[in-house]
Length: 137
Image 1 (cartoon, rainbow, N blue to C red):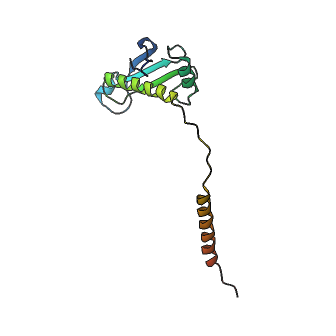
Image 2: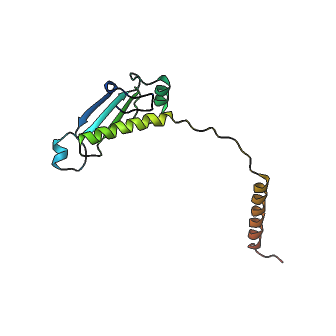
Image 3: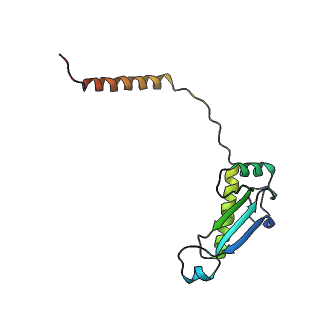
């Protein structure tokens, strides 16, 4: 099963993968063979640490249901094995994306020189526009 990090990996029993018929063009292969992988992963029932579960459930992702189940449908390839691997890889990406924290922004002030350059350019632009006005006697 895919390893999320060195210490954390997913258990095979927690991931439910069913194969269904794929959509779209493909001729006889699409009509006969169930190649699309339909993956379901219940976040609440998983063995992930609580921090991972909380961040996953807080994600605004359409693939996560209100019940806390991640649903992924992989049908990019024509073989079951490739679609299965693709679905597992996408599950790993969702979990890794949830654990990335944004760096805190430090408030900064523009330098005095940059403020002066800005004011100079504004006054230059204003003078240029003044030259375009109608000349009065």
